[in-house]
Structure formats: structure tokens, C-alpha cells
Image (tube, rainbow, N blue to C red):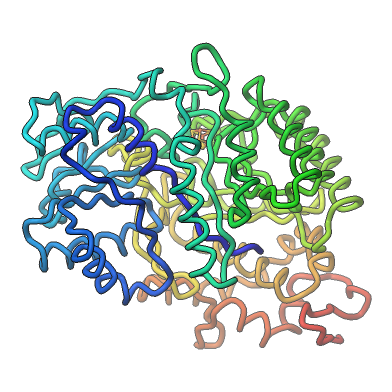
Length: 528
Ligand code: SF4
């Protein structure tokens, strides 16, 4: 697995609009974005150093689910030391426009931007500099919500923030590469479309405020992607690109981009690789042709698919567009086979991503998702259903409709706020599915994956033998909110349980011996 550090271009996007549209252009100096590195205990000292050195008046944080806690803690500390410094926040995890508790809970924030930030930040900077300004997409610290407007200014949208600020981006990538010192690869976030036409209820794309899609290369929006990819290839410190379009393959230019990237990768020694592409949900035949082109060229070297669930009723409840599984399965099975035959350089399993805790799901969904994945040689990789603030699923009416029970629990040592029951699944059923999944995952991690994947039907056939353990794990969960396996009164984390109970697990989950032994990935053999 590649460990990466993400360069998010949001600062340059906001700045591009500001430098073209603001009334207060002479009032501010913009600094390059300040990346937070790995040790959160250094955050405050580094912030003080920067604030003192650059005499900063306004700080803006880009908040996502994965950095929210860290950034909010940092903002609170900074405000305590510099009460007059203006602190703004924006990003998909900011729900200041719908959550009346936002400012009472975060009194150190002065302004919060919601939705797209380009116009919001420009109008806010004008306002703070004393210019008359129509505030948009912002909320002040008294809770006043100013109107929302999608960002549609074609004169700005057709410019490329990557090319406009190429020197600053290249310098940041260079500094990061030096500071990371080989611990992670430098990753550039890149998009060639903006927005998504779909409304998957678990997703906060465009903060759920609109579903307009803007495509660079269509109509008045010039296609900058060739020049941008060339630029990334010239900066050797940019090692990986996260092409964040949510539906690669959906727009007519995507096959062209794939061909161009493959050619660039073959001919340019510092052309970055691609990570985690999100493929179109409907055009599967085209998608798998594009996947294969990338694999052939070496632009990607792994293959993953997002499906969320196989059940059409669940997909309907979460408004997920998806090709019916009966039609998709043969296409995917063929692609998985080709991947194993030709491309699996790291000898790892294909993963299919699902979500657990969705409306309409029962234990049968977990079982079906895992068995069906196994039949085509893939592993079901399941995320717990976290309800993000700006998603359709966060609407109280949606929560009420499906009776979603949301709770903070601990799993594998980490806290997570997730759905633990719904109108179709009680807590015990949810916990049974959760244990079934994590136990299987630990088995795959412990042993050579080919010995485990594909045996899921047997695994579930015998799962009832695990009932006593499920019962005690459930009692433990009700008392502690911790998901663990409790056996003979002792709570175990999944990996430890698998290591210490191999024979028992074998009896429970395998009817026939697997060549008389399961081979552990760490080269120890377990003979039965
Ligand atoms: S999950 Fe993907 S396809 Fe669905 S709304 Fe979000 S971005 Fe669009």
C-alpha cells in the first residue's frame, strides 16, 4: 500500500477567483498553503512561528472528516493566543448553515464557508477589508446564514489554478518531499470535472447543495488537462495523482485523458502514477477497457471497485446508480481474472468496497456481498456507515424514515460514529455482520489470500456455530460500545483472536482441510 501526503489545490482555486474578481486586491498578501505534517503535538508551535513570522491576520482551514478534530483543536488554541486573528473554515465537513449548534460548539471560529468557496472567500475578504460586498455561502459567528450560490463563473473556471500557480505548487511539492523524507509519497489532488450528477445519500459531494457538473473541455471551459498532466510530469516531486472525478468514464474526454496519460507515463520518466480512481457507475464495459489501458501502461497497479451493496432495494434507498449485479457480475469477473493473470504485481486480492449499516440491509446483505465477491475471486472490503454532516442521509427525515441509530463506538482501537441499527436490522444483527466481516478480513490478512477468498459460502454455512461467541460479544458491546470478540469471558481484538484460535476457526469455517494447512503470510505454517 502506498502511503501518501495530499496536496489539496483548494487554496489556489480560492486565490484564482480572488485575484481576478476582488475589490480588495491591494489589501492582502496570500501565503502558500501551510501543510500539517505528522506530529499533531507540533501544530501549535509551528502555527505560532508562522503567524509571528508572516504577521498573519486571517487564517483559513480546509476541513474534511479526516482532519476535523485536529484542525478544530488547532484553531481553538490559536484563538486563545491571538484573539484578534480572524479564523475562517470551509470544506465538505462544515455544516454551519444547517447546524445551529455549530458556533456555540466552535466559538473560536469567526466565519464559516459552506458549499463552494471561490465566491464566498472573495466576498468575505472584500467585506473584511471594508468594501461593500454581497456575502455568499458564508455564515457569521452569530449564526447568520448568507445566501448560497453555486460557483459558475466561466471566466474563472476556464483558468487552471495548477498552471497559474505552478511555481508555488512545484516549490511546495519540493519542500514536502524533503520534509517527508521518504515516509510518504507526495500526492496531487486533481479534477477534470467539478460536481456530480448523482445524489447517493451517504455522500457529501458539493455539500449536497447542487448537482451541476462542469466539465473542462466542454463548451466554454477550456480543456487544461494536457498541460496540467505535463506540468505534474515536470515536477518530479509529484509522485502520485488522485484524479478525484467521481465518475471516470462518464465524460467523452475521459478515454482521451487515459490514452494521453498512458503515453506520457511510457515516455516521461517522472510522470506520476494514479491512485484510487472512482469509475463511472454505469458504463462498465468502457470503464474496464480504461482500467486495462492504465494497468498495461503501469499508471495504476491495483484494481478496486466501489459497489456499496448488491441489493437493488438498498441501492434504491441510498439513491445509488449502479448496473444490476446480474449484468455486472460476468463483466467484473472477467476483469478480475484478467487482472490476476496479467497485472497482479504485488500478488494481492482485488477488493470490492461496500458499506455496512445502510437502510434496508440485514445480515443477509453482508453474507451475499461477501459470498458473491468471493465467487469472482475478490474480497468484500466493508466500511461502516458514517453519516457525514452535509449528506442527504444526515437529514433528520431520512434518519427517521429508516430509524437509523447512530452511535460512537470503538472498533480496532479507534472511535467511529456509525449506524448500529435501522428499521431492518437490530443491534445484534448489525454486530453479527460486523464480526463476520472483521473476522474474515483478519483471516485474509493472516493467511495467503488465495487460501481464504472464495470459501465464504462455507464460512457462512458454519457461522451459526459461532453463536455463543456472538452472544457474549453482544453483551460486551452493549456494556462498553467496543466491538471485540468475547470468547470464554475474554475480549479479543480480531487479529489476536485469529492468531490464538486457528484450530477452532478452522473447525468453524472450513469443512475440508485446505491442503492440510493454512499458510500464514509471515511464512509460518499452521498444520492441522
Ligand atoms: S458517491 Fe460518487 S456518484 Fe454518488 S453522489 Fe457521491 S460523488 Fe456522486
